[in-house]
Length: 215
Image (tube, rainbow, N blue to C red):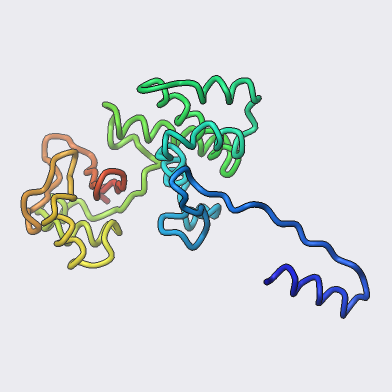
């Protein structure tokens, strides 16, 4: 493969001996390879995978993988890794949050990791949508939002769906939500509430979010 080709090239051009280092494939507990070719894989470049999306990637890992990933992808002492890995049930959420925070901190820095953690807590708790700065955001003219936009068009424009056809199918299958409420029709008119609401939160499936902010 590439490693052998590289060592051979060095030998031919430089007359030197080169060595290649390999590592076992990293797989999840379900046997799926973690890599750039796998659907849903993440990038280290924040322009390709935002710090918030990176954080969510780690917090959504299988319960069975948490202790191993804490050992591999954080700098926590092993005593703490084992303590977190021993947590069960609802308490395991603490371990997942620490895994996500520590992994994001190593990749993007403590400031971005903190923003991502707070945004996640706000989305899954009772926080304000307008304050969730790290959540992927799409800006649309306020006047247009006040008039209303059909749901399938809004989902396509937000980037949650690749096309309007994809958006229609998502909503028809019950996977489209606005501010936590499931959409009943693909052409349902979505408006920015005139009672002081400063943002809309779109959700596709269980874990993909985009915040709609008025310009």
